[in-house]
Length: 412
Ligand SMILES: Cc1cc2nc3c(=O)[nH]c(=O)nc-3n(C[C@H](O)[C@H](O)[C@H](O)COP(=O)(O)OP(=O)(O)OC[C@H]3O[C@@H](n4cnc5c(N)ncnc54)[C@H](O)[C@@H]3O)c2cc1C
View 1 (cartoon, rainbow, N blue to C red):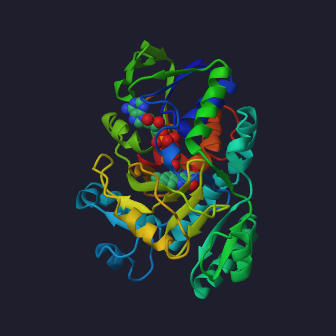
View 2: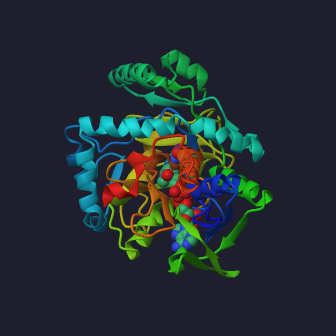
View 3: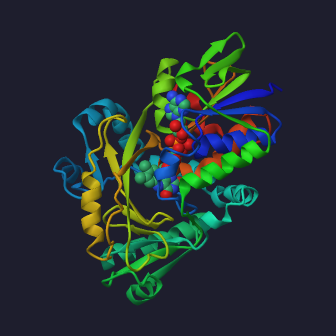
């Protein structure tokens, strides 16, 4: 066995990969330019989404593209340069979202999601992070009876096909469950299996602390300095040049930039998203998705976190938090958010692939290099199973899930 390995990127995915490799006897160095869990894995809605068995498809509703083009609604925003940069990948995303192909993607996606809570559980326990996690599910709430009925039907279908548990709640049941609601809504689907984390960045940091307590090294360095040197890989860190026999790229939304320098042109794109915290006078008990408007309200240690839908813009383009303003206005229609915390809106990016499946496995043309990125809307959820699967592949063990659908080779 090649025993030393670099893991580049200390988000949820990289940190869990490091832990699983370490558990298998590898000498692991985890490298990031920042402290663990300071980027996408920090700013998300904190949901461990056991219910998210279907990957997020390109919407096909009539009128959707016109609404997006005219800037109507809060769900999508775009920069012309973003569409230009990501256009080809987005067209492929639309192609893969055809119902037949989406059903196939769901088969592969749901196999990972099935492990979500079961794989977080032992890490939460070992990292003594129970104080960060609530296990009471979360709600999709609905403004109209038609949307609620359709969602309740879909929830039943997901239960039959994937064993995902939920409870439909009518107007009165929802009002009782969430006293913060100021006006009656049509109802809610309360997903019972997901967990909610009240400080997602802190959970990654606790996992990283566990990795260090077990003898792992976390170093500050730039993944762009990665080089193949003979049969080894090296990267520059503040502790000097670090060598290892193998390396894993787990750079989330920055992965595309790095793999391009290695000659891999995959159909990757990003969906940027924002968050802002508020101080509601009546606390929200469990996270809520305003399902017909496309934003989440999630109670966090810092306050009530509002997270937005997708913005198609270059990763380094200046923030344009128009969706945040729209979502805030929509949320104020049914909840007293109180004041926003005096902080600039947070901006991050979901690392997406055209076929909606993550990229996990050996780099096709670089022996000793492995990829683990592209977990899109559910990377926080899938970090532990993604880490385990990658570590099993590196170690040449039987894998918990058939890795074939996620193999980098599918993109050439
Ligand atoms: C608004 C929003 C809400 C979301 N809500 C949820 C949710 O509720 N549940 C869920 O499961 N998912 C959610 N997601 C998606 C989830 O956050 C991501 O899929 C996940 O965080 C990706 O994890 P990662 O480890 O791959 O990437 P990251 O967390 O971004 O980690 C990548 C790491 O690479 C490092 N890095 C990058 N470039 C370099 C370099 N050159 N050198 C060194 N280090 C580098 C970064 O510093 C970073 O630490 C949400 C995303 C957004 C934007």
